[in-house]
Length: 114
Image (cartoon, rainbow, N blue to C red):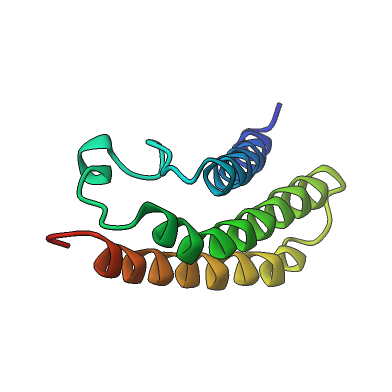
């Protein structure tokens, strides 16, 4: 198996995991320990508001990751010209940076000493 397939599968697995964690957090109203460490969770002023702030971005990022993983796998499997993957990777990176920006903004707003 080509090692690039492993990267594509890791992206897919991470996207599915993030989607499941995001939905679980939204349903439970509790921050999952994989989103941040348990010590930091104790500093949260309003867990529900934090989840509400990052949940849409988690879903958008996980969908962008799914698209990037699937497109990467298909383009590698069918040996399509490598430049065809650039739009997907561009979308992935834009959404990634937007997610990180919103995550950090929510940290500053809903956590003590951040």
